[in-house]
Image (cartoon, rainbow, N blue to C red; front, side):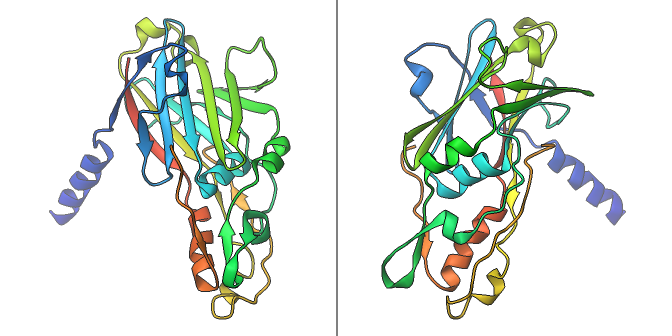
Amino acid sequence: MKNIAFLALVLLGSCASLNTVTSEEKTSENNRSFRYSDSNSNVLYHVSNDKENLYISLNTSETASIAKILKTGLTFYFDTKGKKAKDLYVQYPLAQNQNISKEEMTTPSKNNSRVMQVDLKKLLPQISNLGAYKNQDATENFSVLNTESDIKITIEAVNNAEMNYHLTIPFNKISAGGLASIGDLSVGIVSGKFSPPSGAGNNQGSGQGRSGGGGMSGGGQGGGQGRGMSGGNGQSQGNMSVMSTPIKFWFKVAL
C-alpha cells in the first residue's frame, strides 16, 4: 500500500502544472523588454510571436549563468503537449570541450578575496557559430551566421558583464502545421554545468591552494543587475559550487 501511495505522489509531482507565460505580439518596442524571470539563475526572459515565428529573448548579468550559457551550451526544448518532452530542441551554443579555472572566472579584490566576474569581450569570440536542431530522430546543424537559416540566434553584450540572447524559431519547426496546429506549448531552457575545479577541496582553510581546470557536461543532449558573488577562502568555494548547478526552467506559453 505504501508503494502505491509513493508511486501516486511521484506521478502527481511529474504532472505538476508549469507556470504560464503570455506571448506578446511581436513589435520592435517589446524586443528589449523582459517580463519574466527565473529566480534560481537570475535569467530574465520574454516571449513574443507573430503568425510565422516564436521569439524568445533572455537577459542576464549573473556571472555563473553567463559562463554556463557560453561555455557549457544552452538548449531550448519545445513540447506541443505541454509537458517536458525533450524530443525537439534547439541548442546554441553547443557544449565546448574546454576547462575553466577560478582565475578565468574571478578577478582579485581586497583582502586576498576574489570576485566572480566574466569578461564577455574574451568569451564571446570563443563561441562556435554552429548550432543544432533536433526533431525526433532527425538532427541538423546550422550556422548562426547563415542569413538564410530559418532558425536565427544572436548573442550580444550589453556591456562587458551583461548579455542578451535572442532566438527566433518558425512555428513549422515546432509543429509541421505551424501556429494553427499548436494547442499546448511548453518550453524548457536548460544549460550544461561545470565540474568543480580540480583541487577545490584542498583550498578551503587557507585560500592558498592552487586551482586547476574543471570539466563540464553539456546542457541537454546537448535584469537588471544580477547578484555579485564574492568571497575568499572557503567562501569562494561556495561561489564556485554555483557553477555545478545547471540553468533549468520550464514554462507554458499562452499564444
